Length: 370
Image (cartoon, rainbow, N blue to C red; front, top):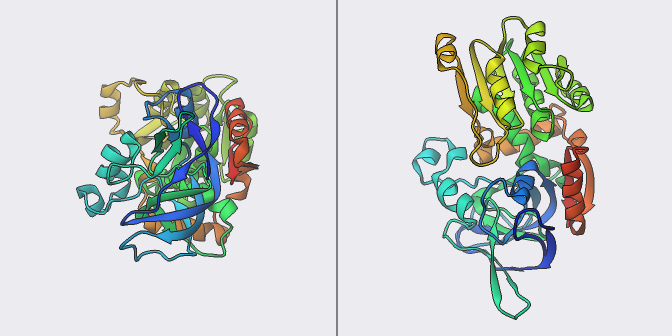
């Protein structure tokens, strides 16, 4: 099959002929319908996060189940699925407590080692010298390919009438953004919310805040077109951070500070801004992820005296098998906007161009269609 292979930072990704082994026990094969190009993939491409290489890229996608491994009873051939980049093991203490986004096996084996639960990969290719080369999985998914083999718990069954070339974005951008509001922060009706960064994830934080019943939702970005779009997703106010200090502008709108501030970018400056925007009892939620080793600072005295919190949000603290189908239902019922998140679609062979578009800052989500 064809797949996008990444070998080392800041080099051109390539489309290669890759071998995909049959699913083992507890795994399934999925024919990919669409895969989203996310900033996390760009972080990998730029070398911001150390990942085992070579690897097949992609962690957001949708498709149809084509083969079941031994013992899989939760899915059937022909099921429509959205892929989850946290496939819960169901055995660690976090999964057993219902905190599936914290799955210990994913955090210690699947994600850092580029393998599936058994510590091996299903991906390989034949090198120019005729020798077989092992390829790694990206976050247990590797969706920039014609097919994938994933743990059954990472292939989330959804309704058949939902368009696969749209709902692919639920697997990361939507689950991460909406989940950060509904699960991690548990935003309450009538709250005030600031959202720093109005890209694919940030816009979903905005519409998550709207769903939660927030009274004021302030969209913040250096690109006016993005905050304008945020107004369509439910923001009540917007701030152009390219003009002057965003914190200063926010306090002009809400003198007491906000109840919740979401950093959907993940830069040191935006993390520090999110903390400074808080009112008494407020919570800063870190959704966007920075490069490895990045550090931000805050004043502990201020945080303590103001009874404030800093929360990390991994994958929107979702329970994939519950939250992903529910998000798809909300889209089909008209409660969530997904179509405007998709800036365009490209064939898999144009993956490099899709990354160029993302780096240029002119797109939200490009979907790769195998």
